Length: 79
Image (cartoon, one colour):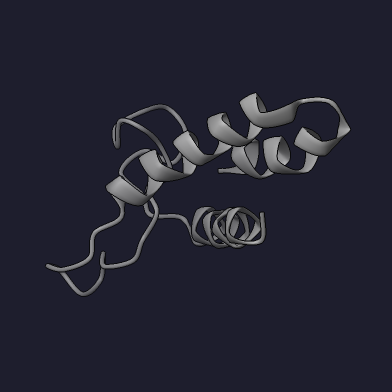
């Protein structure tokens, strides 16, 4: 999502519609990984890694990942 938000900001500086489309695709992927129901401790959490057992943030739902996701979703909505 950090990359997606960067693409949204760079699009008007020369990245164009391709950057916007790529950013929207990245955000859509992350949104599909966020649990909307189930374990209350995981609902709304953003995984620290994909797959969840990847090297960074293994088996964790990181608070800063959720913050960056929200920032990127807001930037996308503002387009």
